[in-house]
Length: 209
Image (cartoon, rainbow, N blue to C red):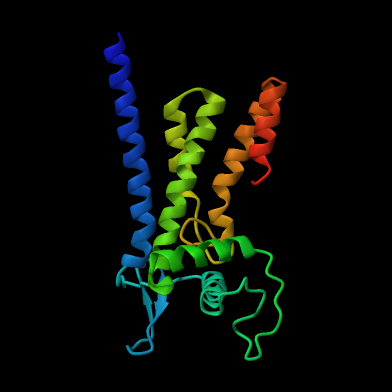
């Protein structure tokens, strides 16, 4: 009986890993073979459809990604906490409301020595992996079952990405912070059901999120 239980547990883990890795590859493939419309000033006609003529693009796609990347690079170069607009010649003051994201990845790229411009394309896939794992535990916590939690990752992957709603294609503070929402709700639920001591611990764990 224990053997059968462990066998099913092993199968669940394999399926979970397969879904997460396949989803992260699909997101990374947007850069390896961009499926949307694009413009190439060196070819004629200038506009092309990536579905019939895919192109590799190793840089951030969305304008918001370039904005956040500029903030990250400025922090790395200036060795400061930012609050400057790197697009202004006089580096005018900029109230950076997403300073945590910029500082975190400025530190990450500084410690790893990776080129932030070329490595940024891998962040959406990394964010998807982190969010998918937290989503799995979130759904499993409330349903008590693994397979609905695995299917929830497929629905999460199916959310369309576009320039207006963003989505899994892009690395922004929004897509990065999704896992915190799932963890917060788990700790909140535990806080409601737990005893006084555990309730205090779970509230403390929820504060940073």
